[in-house]
Amino acid sequence: MKKFLSILLVVCMLACMMLTAFGETVKLAYSSGSVKLRTGAGTKYSANGVVKNGDTITVLSKGKNWTKIRTADSREGYIKNLYIDGIGSHYASGTTYTAHRTGKVVTKYSSSTVNMRAGAAHSEVAIGKLKSGAKVTVLGKNGSWYLVANSSGTQGFVHSKYISVGGSSSGSSSTTAKVANCNAVHMRSGKSSTSGIVATLAKNTKVTVLSKSGSWWKVKYGSKTGYIYKKYLK
Image 1: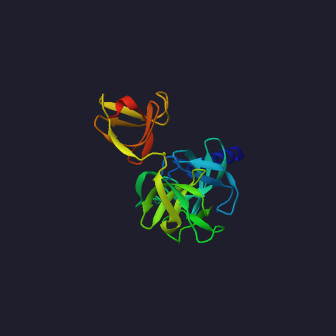
Image 2: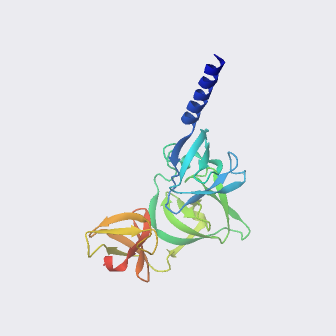
Image 3: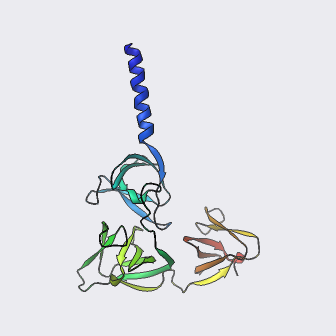
């Protein structure tokens, strides 16, 4: 009887673990984004590295606003529910994406800082601070707020009154081009035919050219950014 109860207990524990831990994907507003993996359920806790958009994670326990996760490399920590696909409402809903542009934080006093928030509202939690004069990459706009990425790639929203927007972050004005010379072309994550495929584009698909450097052009299609060999564009 004791042996039976012991086996039953083990089965119940395994079942609970299967019910509690399940796989999900990190879902950020932009493909190159990352967020800090916190050691506790709040921004006051230290970071155990970062998780990036598209990372596969294991959900260990879900809280009201923060979820405990385990990364593919066995790090454990907390990220906000809104950064997990299928758990929170996507924090960038309503954001209009644009070609990457450079921006600079502008405040009344040079010693001031501004909050970078998890959503396009003053009521959203602050996920970091930016110093006056800090350079950011402007990814899109949501009402009076810019979606930006700081120097480490972390994304958040800053009110437009604190951001001075410049030109294309690629260093040249963006232009449009069409896929040519074949029926389908791979847009890749790097400047190589062995780099990962970001998207496959049909002939005559329009893309935004962000930079023309060497044989591979950096382009943007929808919300995706990647590289296409120049002979396939016109």
